Image 1 (cartoon, rainbow, N blue to C red):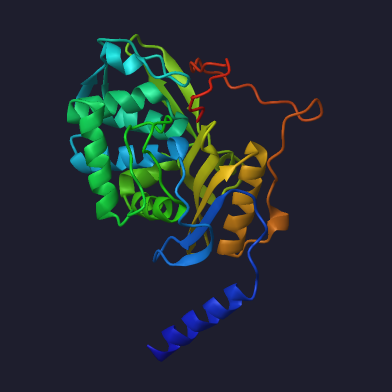
Image 2: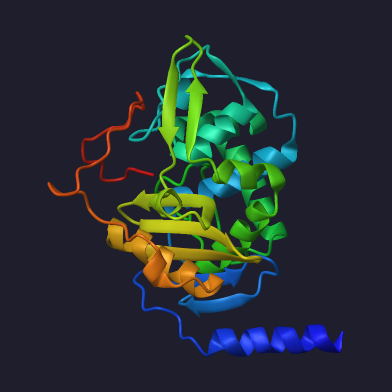
Length: 299
């Protein structure tokens, strides 16, 4: 016992000797994903919209309700969710687990609505389930009114609360495997397959990053919850309200490296695609509106 305490004390002192990196974002939290302890925070309790990162709560509610082989029948009301949609058609049927995986990998709003309506009967009733679960997790500064994170009055959370949600998701075996999925082959009801690429570029570029969720609306700005694991250490980062998408991924990488004790010189920075660095071609038929949407959730 004395040895374990000494080792823990040494680890804390060693970690605290290295200051956290300077990162952007309105609110930032870093926690130890093994015990939930906060390693660093800035404006952790500032209430603000969090975009599609709240789909993690939608997913957690669905998983804990069970019956993931249950077939969800798509209804016309599920389609009214621009700008990001998977293009599901009324009458099509998919298992909850199929839809959950698509939701967390590519973040379609129609999928979130279909899952919520199918589970609770209405989006308003599902919001009650979301808020009940949030309260159970100790998210005392949050309130949710829809399953997808699109802007709505009286909908908000904090970086500290989202870290509590991320911790719960990280310790759910099924959700942890889903958030680590880089590509998902989604088979549609008509037999076609769409290759969905995970929106978390931090995970795409760094093997130590093992998942979580992006989010963006004009009100929330760029948000990202990310998790990472390295040599027995696990960490979760939360950045809300970042004004630049590329900075968001780079700052998340810096925070994960700091929390996990990884030399930053060993990772590849996220860069905007230029003529010298062409954008990769993704061969899928994912439906996403490109037109500017004042109230839209992009990811």
